[in-house]
Length: 227
Image 1: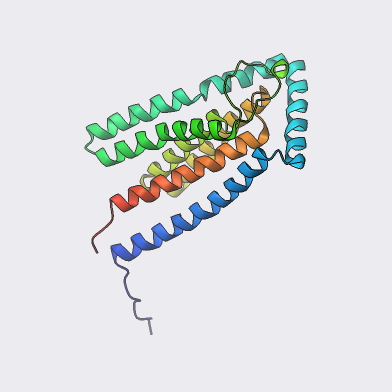
Image 2: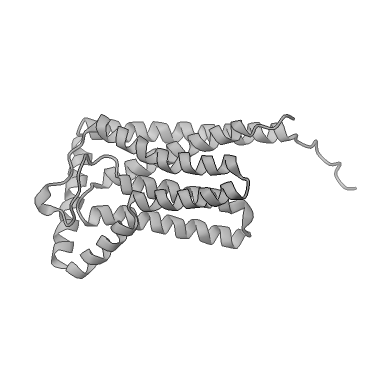
């Protein structure tokens, strides 16, 4: 005998389950990010030693290998926040023309908002960058979090979120892996050029995940089904 079909869930029940899951993930990321930012602000010795050691090792290596330094300089230039902000604006304009106006606004606010949140966090933490003498590119402002790592990770993760339902599973997985590799390359380029510490990159990724999850939750609430 075949099993009787189980009770069907309503759109509202599915919405609640997804929102609860996103909320739980958001809480976890916020807690982890809070720990990282507290360790950075208090200059926790083990983290500070790790950051400085990695920064010194990378700086010494790439100062002796200018070819590789040039490669990572190209990656960091291609991965600057303005590039992703402009691309997201172009994508949003296409969505607007396709009458997907909520999605267009969601895209613009998420990507451009990440830059604003990053700037505010820099002011809050006020962490100094690695020593000027060791840097391989010019950089202004505070060090934590990395604006390159933050904006690129948010924009690339958002691309995966938007494209995932429209792709077959193999293509969706390939896109997610490719996006993760690009985000990792942009983050590593900032360390390779000695303008950021490791914790600046990790903190940027955590802040980006926090912001993206919060925006996804807000977007889902705005599109809440009636039943």
